[in-house]
Length: 137
Image (cartoon, rainbow, N blue to C red; front, top):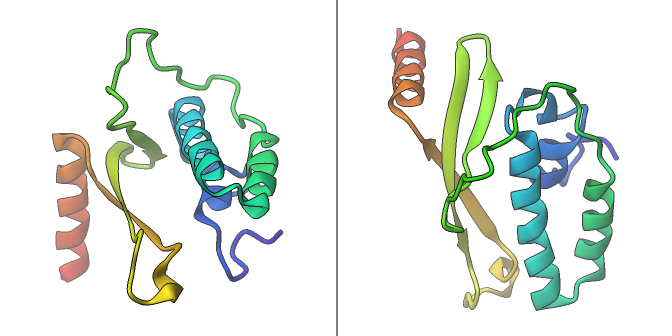
């Protein structure tokens, strides 16, 4: 499927070799995190659509040979896995939070999940602030 054709699937866009994957420094770690989260959703919903997506995403290759691997003792306590992007200005690190609308009044929101990303370190926050200030001019 086309990565930017509606409806855009952020998991597909993130992990596909023609999407963001080549810029994700910790792709193996991030991929494992996303696939584990998707497996939990499948366990909770038994959705064949999600199972098909998991199968597709699991088949995507790791796109670079010299991929960063998290040290074996890395422990985020199941709370936070950083997302690290390689950019022209250096590596930007983010953590995310996800809000899921479990029992909304409006049924159209019943499967809506919003993920928000925040700077995970001072260098990333400084870089983003510089970009914002530059764009305000």
